[in-house]
Image 1 (cartoon, rainbow, N blue to C red):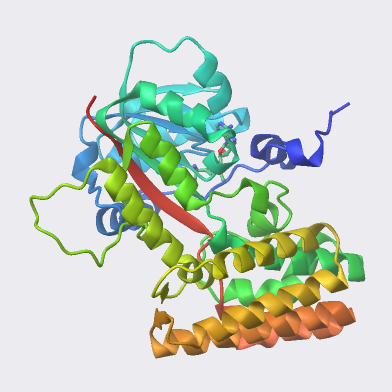
Image 2: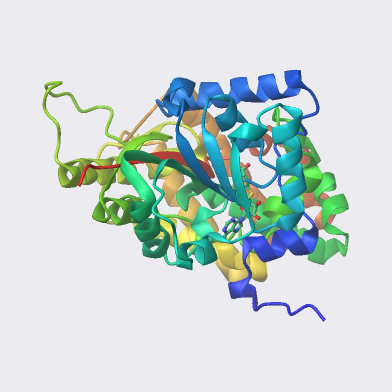
Length: 405
Ligand SMILES: C[S@@+](CC[C@H](N)C(=O)[O-])C[C@H]1O[C@@H](n2cnc3c(N)ncnc32)[C@H](O)[C@@H]1O
């Protein structure tokens, strides 16, 4: 009999294996499929993360959680020799097939079936890497100092750690979608995928995604590991990495204070850079929540606790809908609405309009959830333009560089 872990202890690896999910962005069938995916990654890495393909030439790269290996095959195209650590053994044949199909088998050093946790406990040979990559799961590996200390031991000086993860504030809207979905499945008794199509179909079809609605339902809406307690709070993440000798090299969205101007030859000390970054991050909370520029003129003691409470309440609605908590969410949203509409926030007029419309829709949906009429909720979610358009900034990328010892 399969042993089902307690909800809090469910790992993404366990959930994916149980559901038979092999996470994929594309189904790379031909060279032209791979070329178009490579172009997408090239744009992201060159323009947003300042790591052009040439940076990977003749490098040693270690990737954790590569799933089917779509990202790894692109790193290999750019010249990296890839060591891949993927605990979902069902993904291994896909990885090997891709490397053979695209004539890059000589770039595949090893495919290991461990988790990051068990790999880190094994006796690691003296090998050090130019790049360590962990996309799509690292925020679930706790405690953070465990993997950070491990990465610090096996990365070369000046080597890069590339991360992609769920961020706390950017996930407000994703948590809200999960809360709607959970309430609606209970109200209608419908199965998850069919149900999601009914109220989120229009929203899902409004973006140029490359994955199916079914995989979004499994990866996000039904995924018990996509929860507030697991997401990264950025100041803490950057501080933990800085304490182990890493500094932020690049990120998307930007965490460095890009408004600062000083002499090109001045190099801020890591602690100075961290302080400046942390302030910039705190002033970008609303931008992350709504996926648009809403930069706070200054940080204040009132706003952040209120947003954090909104996040905690929204997260709790996923487990059990509660009228009082939903009303409290509406109150917090009212405060954010007033703030966004004030001159304490730097925004473009178009963004203010769109975010205020999105907040109005979220408040309306909360009232509909309180009333509990599933048809009204489904009709509103499928037709309201502001709700359909608004996604926030749930996943972030960051590249950290190891300083010289
Ligand atoms: C969401 S998928 C992301 C796949 C790929 N990295 C990407 O970004 O497209 C997460 C992958 O991480 C793997 N994974 C989950 N927990 C892990 C762990 N503790 N150590 C290593 N890999 C893990 C899962 O099996 C899955 O293949």
